[in-house]
Image 1 (tube, rainbow, N blue to C red):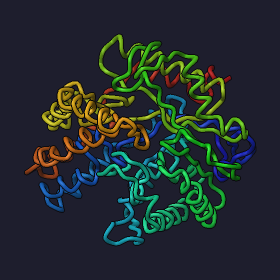
Image 2: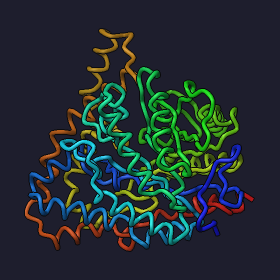
Image 3: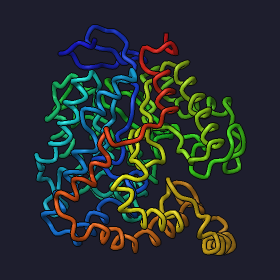
Image 4: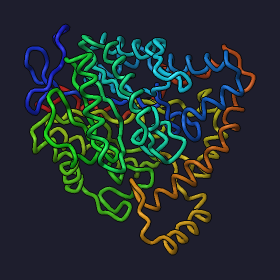
Length: 468
C-alpha cells in the first residue's frame, strides 16, 4: 500500500515512495480518450477536423452531448477495477490542449476541461493506480503527425513563441490543479516531441521544467526524447526530479510488420535485436543512472491466428527485457475498436455498426497511418514514390524520410480529409438517447477482452514472479 500523503520521487535510478521504497510503475496509456486518434475509435484524419465535421452535422447541443457521453463511457470504475485486478498500478492519461483552451481565446483556461480528467484520476486513486498527465497535443503541434491533432505535416510549436507561451501557461494551471495529489505520479509535458532543428527542444524543456517546478516543486516530471521519444543526444546532464522516457515500438509489431523473428521493413528482428534497440534508446538513462520509463510500446493485432501468435511472442520478449532491467512501462493502448487494445468494442456493437462504412473505406484507401496499409492504393502510391526517387534522390525530410512523407501527405491527409463529411453524416438526426446507446459500446461491461494479452500483462505486472 502506497503512502497516502507522500508523492513519488526520483532517487538515483529509481522512483521511490514517501518511505524510500522503490516503486515500479506499470500499466496502460489511455489513448483515444481525451486525445482522440483515428485508428483507436474509427474516424478519419485528425481530431479537431473530425469534431468540426460532427458539429456541423449534429448542431452545437448534440455535439456537446456526443463527445461528453463518449468521454463518460470510455473509462468508468469497471475499467479501473480491471486494471487493478491485473496487478498493474499506472494509467497514463493523454490529453489534448483543446479541452482547456480555445484557439480564439488563448491563455484563458477552461476549468471545465478538468472534469473528466479529475473523474478518472479519482477512480484510479480509489483502486491504487497512479496516473501520469500527458499533454499529447500541444498548441501549434509538437510533431508532424495526426496524434498531436495536427492537420498538416509541420510542427509549428518549435517556430512560434506564441504557441510555446500558451503551453507554459497551460502547464502552470495543470501543475497548480494537481499539486499535492499523491496518486498523480507526475507530469509528461510533451508527447513525442519532434524538433527538426534539434536546437530548440532543450531550451523549451528547460523553460517548461522551471515553470512547472515554480508552481509544483514536488511532482515528478517525465521528459521524452526528440524524434518521437527515441533521441536523447542533445540532453546534457540530467535534471533533479526527472524521469526520462522513451518509446519502444518494434518493427514486427507494426501493421505492416513481418514475421517474428524475421524481416520487417528490410531489417531482421529477433529477441537480441529487440534488446539492442531498447538499450540504444535507453543509453542516456542507463549511462546517467536515472529513472527510466518506457512510455509507449506494443504491437497491433491482425486477427490472423499465426500472425498474432508471433506478436504475442514479440510482446513477451519485450516485457522480459523490461523485467530484467527493472524499468517502468505503459503499454499502448488500453481500449480501442479492435486493433491494439486489451479491451475493444464488440464487432456487432452499435458504434461499430454505425461507422462500418467508414471503416471499410478507410481500410480500402489505407488512410490511417497506424491501422492501415497501402495495399488498396499501391497503384497510385508506387508512381509517386518512383517519381520522387528519380527527381529528388537526396530528399530525406525529417523525421522519417521520403517514403513516409509521401504516405503522410497522400494517404493520411489528402485521402483522409474528404472522408470527414461522410463520417459525420452517419450521425445526422440522432437524439440524446440514441447517442448514449451508441457510446455505451465503449463501456467496460460491453467491451470484448483480448484474453491472451490480458494474461501476458498480468504475468509481468508489478509484484509478479517476473519481478521478484
